[in-house]
Amino acid sequence: MPASRASDQDTRRIASGLAAVLPALHRALDRRIVQDIPFPRLPDGQIALLRFVDEHDGATVRAAADALLVKPNNVSALVTQMVAQGLLERRQDTADKRVAHLHLTAKARRQVAEVGNLIDGYFVEALHALTDGDLDAIGSALGALQGLAQRIHPATD
Image 1 (cartoon, rainbow, N blue to C red):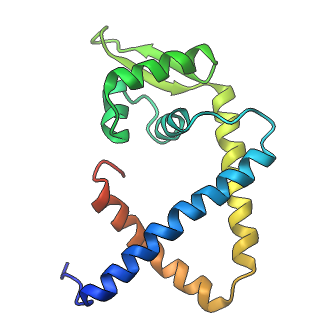
Image 2 (cartoon, rainbow, N blue to C red):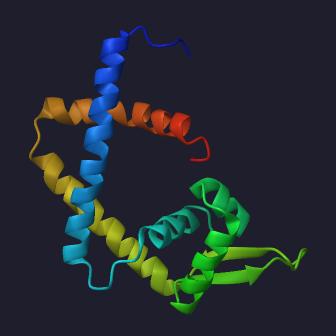
Image 3 (cartoon, rainbow, N blue to C red):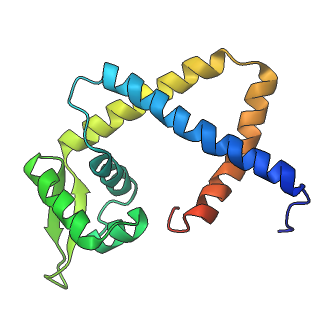
């Protein structure tokens, strides 16, 4: 893929805009979710681990640590907490008893689905308020944003 021919000034403007808007979007979603979920909000680390395990059922602690850029012992501590909360299951590998595979519990699946439905609803509501041109621009940008995320954090899928 050829490199962009955008000027350094344009590239910096876009980078600054993304750096400002993405955290603001995340905070706005977080505030709405906290208001609307019928269960206590989990700490960010636990949320990140739940999302990872939801997308990578059966992943190991090491794989989660690598993907989340966290030390394995910290992920292991999170797993222990989340097993006690009834959110994760730790299943021993049949070939190597030292390895455990992580799975969401039914409770966690319900909570992840509920949060996902809320987020989808917030976006649908907000997108309906935009012009067709804005919708087209956002739709066109999705692939590029996914590529950007992979370049910044190569462990993402």
